[in-house]
Length: 73
Image (cartoon, rainbow, N blue to C red; front, side, top):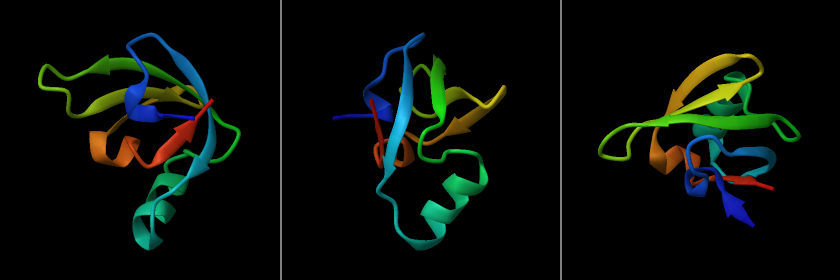
């Protein structure tokens, strides 16, 4: 299984599982990153952090470490 931070710019994936803990996991879910949601990687910053995603029709930037906790198919 791939994690969100392994997707390249332009690739799309479907969230299978969030592996975060407590408040971090809750914050991700509040931002719309829930099981079954499609995400597309729009941009990656020059040094690789943060990553800009398109989720549910809006743009969202998250840290690479946060993206590593999200499994996609």
